Image (cartoon, rainbow, N blue to C red; front, side, top):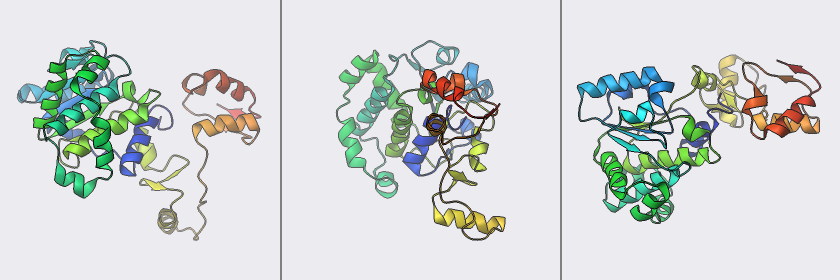
Length: 296
């Protein structure tokens, strides 16, 4: 799950924050002023989350729900604002909202100065995403774009949520970072009811990463390549110094190329089906057939 399904969210969190622990929790659902759902049909795919959110909204009528989805899903039908953008224009939309927030001076300058880097370079990018350009690219009205930016800018606590509509994309990591950038420029992070919240597809996706269940990770978001992290885990586990290898293991795609060039001698697959879920499927299938020994 973390390697394929959620990999864009994982990579986006790591590139923005240095670690992939989402800075939100489920209690935030009942503390937010504005829920921003993009690339997720939460009502059907995460019904427990959606039902909690709707129950809270019924008691708190001022809480806004923005849904970004090309289709009119059951989630979109419940929204205060449904942005039916053209498929693939997510970054245009998000940068268009950022453009308006900056133009209206609805950014958190103190937070930007204290907690972020490279804001001038980001400001130069979003300068090119004027409302007319974005509305045209996304196939929505300027009024709806402005409404979305107003909801975000005027809310004290914005909680964004996304799922496979963002992650399962050729530029999924960039989309995730663009969502996070909106939170960073407005200081909508690190406080109850706000933050960028990736909705996972499987129950223990996060748990596997927290426990160090990937080839580049050690428990608690520690990295195999980091000498201090290795030393901490060696000490905790009662191992001799240097016993944990400094070399991280293969990525999912490295395994496929490893089958091609003969560096993988045994392939063990559990609870996933790479013949349907990996990218470049024809190449993947040919590589799987070359595996000297496969356990499934």
